[in-house]
Amino acid sequence: MLDSDALWLALGFVLVIEGLFPFLSPSAWRQTFTRLLQLQDGQIRFIGLLSVLAGLALVWALS
Image 1 (cartoon, rainbow, N blue to C red):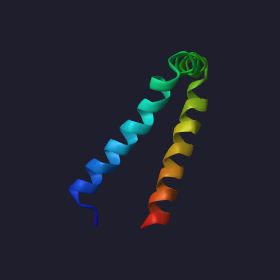
Image 2: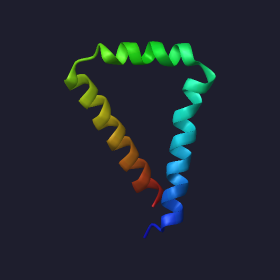
Image 3: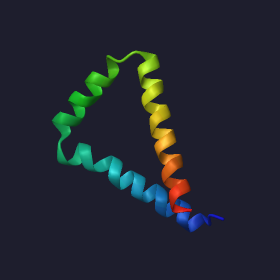
Image 4: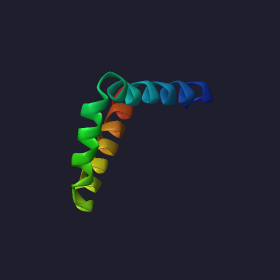
């Protein structure tokens, strides 16, 4: 199964990837979040569902 070192490594990669966009382009990051705030709850849930499904597919494909 998954050991704790792999879990921490995966979390570290997520943080690096999540931090790249605001680091490289803070104004575009801010504009993106401004547009996200204008979305309806259902739209945000759909985006979240797609993210979860994509992550599960990636984990399934790599395991």
